Length: 256
Length: 240
Image (cartoon, rainbow over all chains, first blue to last red; front, side):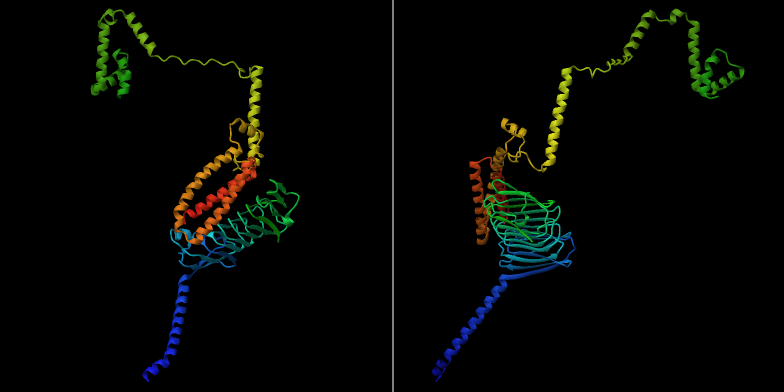
């Protein structure tokens, strides 16, 4: 009886054990995810002329202008989690992950930063995408040492610089009188979307593809140099200056 | 009476030329003032010698020679008079020969032309533009001439020199990157290698073009640009 009884309860016990193991495994997996992904968040009061300076190692950086006098920094950190130590240096918010994690292996850090829309933005990363939108200030600079796309949308800045090695660059904004605009890529596509009545002097160079399209900005003031590898010209009065260089890709101007 | 007045009147007093009142005053002062009394004694002794001795005893022997020596000493110690500058004849500067005048005009014309050319060129070109780094098309005839003679670098020579300098920089940063890359994770290593490969492809392309056509300034400029990118990439990753 006793043996029979034992044999009769054996299958339900195995099922329980299996379920228990599944639950433990699930929680262990969940706990591992929690340990691998951390979140950083911090707010700073800011004036209208604040400057954001960020140097990231790997990951996506998204900067969005908003109509508030504060800076909101959030970051998702992958393991091994990087140390983030923002500094407020007399009106400049500095985040330098390379300096703060010197000699350490760190995982990707994906930033989302909201700044007053009049802020100056200077962001840089070694690997990853950069995106800046809704900024109306004196400076927008985005630089990727290696690969990643740069997307600058709804920008009204007097100095804009975007530079990467492999990846696309999109600028969608307004050319300001007397402004300076520089776009440089080694391999990818540079797309510049600006109002058709923009006024600027331009030097566009695409030596490998010779694929430079001015669209509606094209006029008789454009000079083709070096067998079409470079176009030098003027749109409107030409009070701003623009330089676009793409070593192995295309350059395209699109009317807004 | 004070000492000043006494000394002033002492000569007349000795010669008995003072009135009674002034002579009495001098006497009273001499009675009380020891210094004035000594002066009076000295004068009295001098007058006594003069009155008693013969002139031959007073005058030194060969007085003429003595005066000559005194005179010579005075002359030698006296400063020589400042030489009076000779008055330059007026209008000498303008008295040039025709050849001298023509040469001066020519020198002025050449200097002003060179200054004007440099000023205009500096105004019309970006300030940071080194003329050796400019393209051959942008060089002036004068610069081309100097380059042919060998007085200045041609753009091709300047490019070659800059490339050699940059090679040294690249070697330095590359050594640092090689020392550090063992600590990078796989993603970083792959991304770095992929991007360096793209840059090196461009370097090779432009080098090949320039070997065929050394005067291709645009390729020279692009080669310069991609080498800069290479240095920047190495520098960025040297500290990771």
